[in-house]
Structures are given as structure tokens and as C-alpha cells.
Length: 92
Length: 248
Image (cartoon, rainbow over all chains, first blue to last red; front, side, top):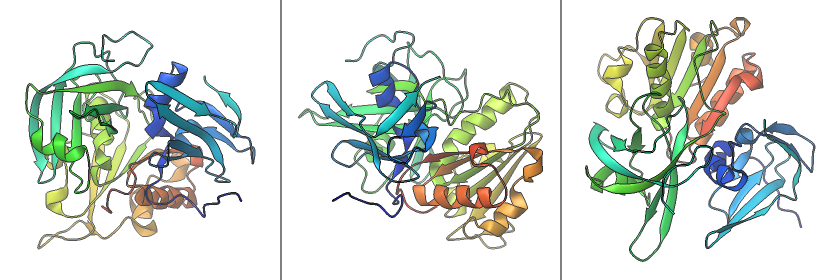
């Protein structure tokens, strides 16, 4: 069963909130990177996506179709990144 | 690991509290000494990391309140059920040290080089913090970009930077709306930001305005949606959401 959300709830943040951890992972500013959803094809800047920090791990969802784009789980000093929901990520 | 900042990399640095002063009953501004600070842009934020004696780590993001070129200042609102903000607003003293990394972000920033484009800033509660940085930056670079700040707060005593905002300078206009309590004789707006208030305050879309909206998530969703309904292209409405931190 695929989890579906009706829309961002009041606790949802946006991609600005993960600028720090993404910079740590990719070594550069990523909130202005263009991300293309692997589910619906919607493309926008990372800052505009829906982010949940208090899920188990950090979860990024597509603002258009709400499917999961990225999951980041921190284990000790290591970030484990699942990007299987992303079709393309283009940093300028 | 905290250490010396390397250009291009984002590392945790140890910051020392230089001063702290109250803004409202639940909000204060903290200035930090940060020897390796490489400077920031208006609208950027930092991450703060607190480590408890037992090793428990809490990280939070806070918008930068000071202008580019000024020492790093953060303005923090105490959240009743918060893990980090009660410590920052009540316990942190000058001389104390915390870990900070930043500056972070390239989307919700204003460099002041968009000459002639009017700016619309819409703040809910402590969402006004990055706009203080933008307004100070606008003043310090001598920008003549027309700017309107629409600021929604619960009551007059909850308005952050009130004195400073009232002296925002030529071409800068601040419009308040108080959602819960208005003082006797209040001549400003009352109630939440709605389509009617935005229609009155927002620059007409034919002037190609650039809008920034910051505050609790529900506030940002509503305001950004209404601006698009008024004809603002979605890519001219930049948003930053603080989560469910209470309605302004």
C-alpha cells in the first residue's frame, strides 16, 4: 500500500530546512538545485518541496504528487541517502 | 566535529554569545562572536546544534536577523514545548558557546540587485526575522527598491523589531495586522491576512513584484496561494515555512 497525503500538514516544512544537511552531503548549496520527481515528472527547486524532519529520518516529498523523493537517515556520523524517487537533480 | 571553516565546505563552528537582548516577552536576539564567519546574504539561515551531557543531540534552523556585513545575530522565539528554544531564550548567557553551521540557503535570499522590482514581504509571527535582515541590507546598500512589509502578529506586544520597523526608511512601508488582540484605538488592520488585505497591500502584478512569504506553514500556504490568485507568477513568490509553531 502506498502512503498518500491529502496535502502538506501544519508540521511540514520546505526544502529550505534541509539546506544544511544537503550541503553536508553534496558539498554545495542545494536549495536552488532543480529536482525532477521520478513519479509525476514535476520539476522545481529543492527549496519548494515538502519536507518532514520528524519522520523516521528526513523525508522530502513532491509538492505536486506527494510521493517520496528523498529519505535521509543519519546513523552515527554517516548520512544514508535514498534518492530513488528522484528522476534528476541539477545543481547550478 | 567543530573546526575552522574551509571555504566551500559547511562545517560546525563554535560560536560565543556576545550579547543577548529581549525583543518581546518570548523573543530575544542573540549576537555571536564567530571568528571564522565568512559572511552571509539577507534571508539565509544557520543550523544550531546542542549536545546534552548524555550525548543527546538536537539540531534546529534559525533565520539570520542581521544584515550582510554585520555580526551574526539570531532572533529566537520561545516555543512552550520546544527542546532548543527555551534554552536559547532563557538560559544562554554572554560567554556561553554553542555549535553553529552556515550560512545556509540560496533560494530565500535577497541580494538587492533586482533594481526597480518592488518587493513584497509577508511575515507571520517570527517569520519577520529574515525580513529584518533584508530591510537592513536594503538600507545599508542605499537601495531605492520600493518595499512593503505586511506583518501579521498576535498582538502589539508580540510585534518584533517594532521600533526599528517603524523607521525602515524611505520607500519602505510596514503594514501591521493584529490577529488576536488590538489595543484601544488601534488604527491598523485586524484579523488574519486574507485576500482583501493582500489586494490592498500587494503591489499590482504588472509591476513584476517579487514576493517573499515567511512564517508558520499554514500561514505561508494560504498567503502564497492568495498571491498566485492575485496574478503573481508562482516563481515570483518565494516561501519559507517554519512548521506548526502556532498561528500568528
